[in-house]
Length: 205
Image 1 (cartoon, rainbow, N blue to C red):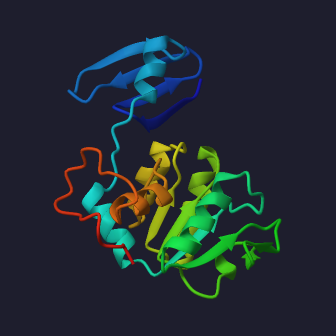
Image 2 (cartoon, rainbow, N blue to C red):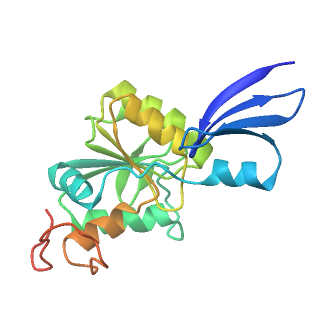
């Protein structure tokens, strides 16, 4: 019989393989034992408690950044990474680097096989990878000394986010850097963000 312990959203889970049960500790300190495959256990694991930087902090990250590396960039115009790369090239002053080991050129610029091959350490590493691949990218980001990893909209790995923060990284997750940049320099409405005064008349550069 083997036992493994993991930190999941809102609970601490101890899974005993032989019994297929899960002991969950709720945020209020209470514990209970649940079948590991029960709907409630799955629900508790799926809830999100990690929030990441708020709007003001994200704005600060974008304002201070000079360069962005896009990991998982694609030369295919139908892919979201291509669209984001196009936007950042045309609507920001960021130096953009494309990272894709299977491409030689993207949007008229050389594509690099990995982060370690870049000519400089980027301020933000924007990630288009499956959620399961985020921890590996975080290790690569830490290895090169980049300060911020930004995981694109629709990609969520809470354990990876917490892991990245434990390594000293700024971590943004499940947010599109294009949307955030456009919102902060007036391309989109703030839609209720309590971010202080961010005028729609100034371009974020």
